[in-house]
Image (cartoon, rainbow over all chains, first blue to last red; front, top):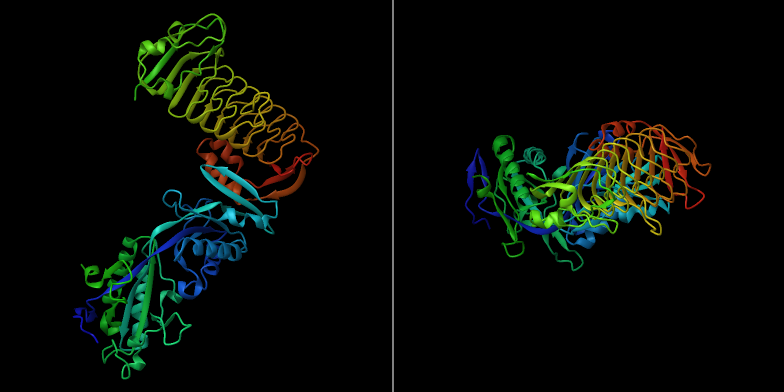
Length: 307
Length: 268
């Protein structure tokens, strides 16, 4: 099945292929709290069960931790990114997740983390204010609009709206292939760590890594996505495999970004980290998932990322 | 940018209406055009040329020199640009202002910032009564923008205020924030009796308390709210003195329960 010619760098074979990605709607939030731990706790809770739009409604994750000088209220915080396939679904997920996971978290406050172009905005505090049952207070100053909702530890302060971008990209990816599960995981973790330093992107799967890379559809009518058997090492002998004889484990990193440039930077950082680790300690081959270029308008070619 | 300068020749014999002297109204006008603009408020005709020595410049920045308290309606309906006044001003400075910056290096008369919608007014001296308040018959006072008073404010500051921020570094008179509908009013020194009288919503922050609080405000305890931190960062851009009072835990009094009761007074 492999017809593509690989480039070999530091012993790692880089497929002559591309990751195919799709336009998404996205927003960003800044969550602050009395300590970095509680800001992170609120963000982790909010972005739980948000690995894939296929089953979770949205993809979400922590972009980066913010120091107290970087947040609106001077407290430690975390920037969270959320991606969905439609504005309506993103609004629904935003309201549910902030309402259940940030409003409820001790000391947390929530602000817009992106301006958004023009009139593209999503309701944040404006949707959650009704929890105040009439005691909520609107406050405008400095060109911003906030809602103050009385809660048991004082007030939940929440910006009324947050920005929405329609330029976001979902589905940038790297397929990391190694001789053993341990070596493949080491390469994937190195890539996730490097991607974590790139702003405006998230890797939404557990620890940034997915072991269940999927294809669209299934033999079962009700299943929208199913295992990507050409990349399953245990099926090498019985399917048209995409794997070489020396590959015993494959892991995938999925990358969502606020812009195509951010995804490019993240994929480059991830690929560079895998190559730097080398074939002896990490992956022996890197590929990317695509649908032949017919479905997604964004194509990220691995070889171009190495230039 | 070289400003357009209007230097007052002498104290005028009648009160003058300076509302035609706005950056957007003077843009593109010649010196002769400007000198011919009428400013009188009585039957005696007075033009700009009669009372001011005019030095042409960019009308986006107007400077009024040697001003006095007979100059009313300065910055009335201003939409952008800047007006700087050296000296005192009369009534209704910055009334219905919708943008730009009005700097008064002196005292301002009553109804400064009345019905203001947006922009910034800074008064280095004192402000008269009814700062930001409505005129008789109007239902809403200040609706947006920021007013900074480096001195003190008179009675009924922020009357029927709907939105915006008023910052007073000195003291304020009786009935500060009376009938407030929303918005924020911060006073560093002590205010007169009955602040927040009949306020429905809105926030009054009193750095030094009041002579007498209305009995219809209910103590809700001392709190360290995130909102106050956020407000401190915003206020710090206009007044470090006022921002300093926001860096403490403040007592919240809820009222005025004689009306809707969803307003609040914060005090130390």
